[in-house]
Image 1 (spheres, helix red, strand yellow):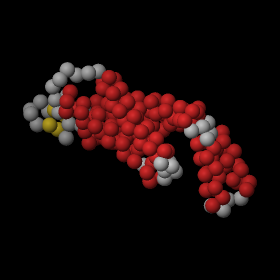
Image 2 (cartoon, helix red, strand yellow):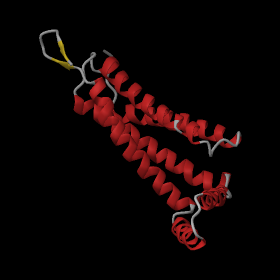
Image 3 (tube, helix red, strand yellow):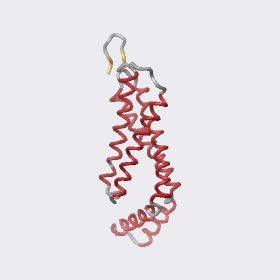
Image 4 (cartoon, one colour):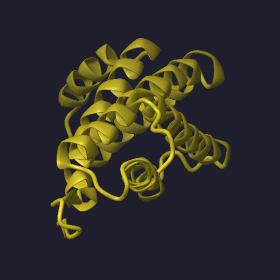
Length: 176
């Protein structure tokens, strides 16, 4: 067992790595013009899940002698997700403000077309788009990105902590 780093330091590192992986993946989708492909967008969730699991397993096996409580495993996952949410929030702001300022309008046009394809009336479409415009902008997109990543990280951390926990009974036999 090595010297144990602070929980925040470990989470900061893993959060940054996971966020970077998700950002690179999203940029690749953007550059290949595949950002609207819903199935490919789910891969980012797999990266998030795998990253949180990796952080929890690493902490348990490398710094805790192979044992970790549910609470500690959850804490590692949740703090990691908060760190990555903040980083992804900054990226989201930069992306919509500087990298692709027209992407928000393009998304609005696609959403409007989908409403038309559903056969909605012009009044319903206009009402829906008016609501959507209130949430369109780099600031709101950043807020939504941070909040959704924290919430998703919370759910994932609650579930993965169940898989990672391994408590020491003190008799050499772990409790699952």
